[in-house]
Image 1 (cartoon, one colour):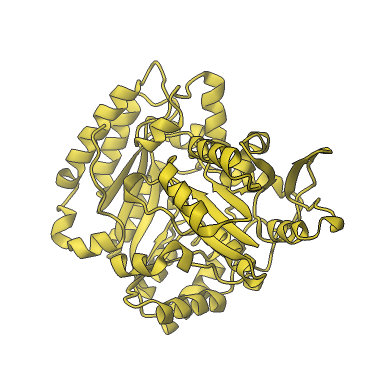
Image 2: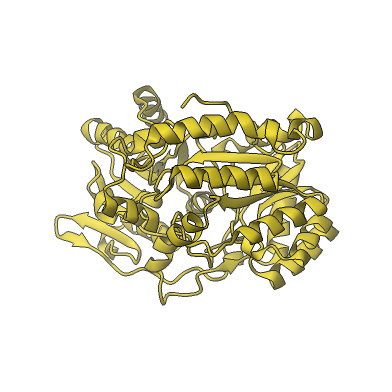
Amino acid sequence: MRILVLQFVSDIRGRPVPRFDPQLGTLLTLLERREHQLALVGLARFDLAKVKAALAQALPQLIYADISAVCVDAARRTLEYVEQHEFVPVVAGGQHPTVDPPGALSLPGVHAIAIGEPDASLVTYLERMKDPATGQVVSGVWLRDEHGLARPEQPHLVEDLNSLPFPQRELFHYAEVVRRTGVIEIAVGRGCPQRCTYCLNDCVAAWYEGRGTWVRRRSPGNVLAEIAQLRERYAGVGRVRFLDHALTLDEAWLAEYLAAYKQKCDLPFRCHLRANAAHEDTVCRLADAGCELVDVEVISGSDFVRNEVFEMDLTGEQIRATFGRLRAAAIRTRAIVYLGAPYESEASLADTRSLLLEIKPDVVDVRPYHPWPGTGAWELCREQGWLHPRGEEQYQADRVGIDMPACRPDLVAAFIRRLRSELPVSVGEPWWRRWSLASRAAWGLVFPRRRL
C-alpha cells in the first residue's frame, strides 16, 4: 500500500519539520517491513502548495496523519482539502487522537484513529484493510463506519522494547540533521514514573492502566547497538542526545548503562536530569561517562507553581544542590523555565528570576507557558476560564497560552523580553566565552530571537 504520512508538528524555536520522533520512526520501520511504500511530509501549518506536491508525488492509497496536540488547526485545514479533492482514506494517530479521540474522529476524512502507542494496533489495522473479510476491529484503534463507532479496548503494552526495530530516520532527512549538528538522538525507553501536570505522561498512562508495565527501558546492549549503527550510517556523528526525561530515574539501570557506554562509546552526550533525583553518585557517573550538558526542568522559582500547580515534588533546595553538583562535576547546564503558568504573578516571576541568578545555569531556555491539551494543567486552565481565545495561534507565535486577570500575557511577554536580554549577561561568566558557537549550535542552543 502507498501511504503518505503527514506529520503535523510545530516549528517554533527553529525546530526542523519534519522532526524525528522515535515512536513514529519505529512505526515507519514496522510498516516498511510489511512492504508498504512510505512518503513523509512535515507540516507546521496549512501549506496548500506543499500538500498538493506531496499528493502528486506519493499518489497515496491511504494517508496517516500524526497530529501534535497543538497543530490541530493545521491538520483540520489540510485534511479538509484532502477530503474535498482526493477522496483518500485517512487514519490519524499521535498526541491529538490520544488526548481527544472524539475530536480526532471528527476531523475531515478521518475514519479511524490509533490511541497511545501505535506499534501493534496500527500495523495490524492497516494489514486488515487489505482484506475487509477479516474484519477491521483492532485493539487500540477507534473506527467510524456505516455501522457506527467501534471503541475497542487498548492492547497490552509492548514491554520488551528490544523486540522493536530501530526507528526509521531517512524519511526525516536525518543525514542532513547530522551533517548540520553532528548529533544523533536516542530514546532508551518509554513511559515516565513522574506525574507532572504540564506533561502528557499521565493522560497516556491512563489508557494502559492494568495493561502492562508503564515505565520500560531497552537493554544497555540494545541502545549501544543503535548508536553504533548510526555512527556507521551517518558521517560526522560527534555527540549523542538522549531524549528520555526519565533516563536517570532508574539508578540500577543507569549505572549498568553508563559503565557499558564508557567502555564502548567515546562520544560526549546530553541528557535530561530531574533535580529531585540528581544524587551525587548519579552526577559523578554522568560526568565520568562523558556527559557534556544536562537539561534540568526548573520550570518556576515559585514552590507553589512547581509543586501545587505542576505537582513536580521538587524543592528549591534540590534545584540549588543539583546545579551545585553539576558545576562541581564540570557538566554544563540548561535550565528550562515556564513563564505565565497557572497562578503566575509578578511575585512568582520575580522568584524565577532570582532563582536563575542564584543557580547560574550556562543556558536558560525561557518558554512562554502554553497549556498542553490533555494535561492536568490544561484542565485546570479550562475550568478557570484562562485558556487564551487564540489557542494554537499563541503557541505557534511562541507566546503565553493562558490569560489570567492577575498576570496578563503582555505582562509575561515584557518579563520574558527582560529575562532573555538579561540572563546571558547577568548569570555568572558569560557562557559564550567558555563555549564555542559550534558547540552551542551542535546542541541546538542557538535560537533566533523573537519579538514578543
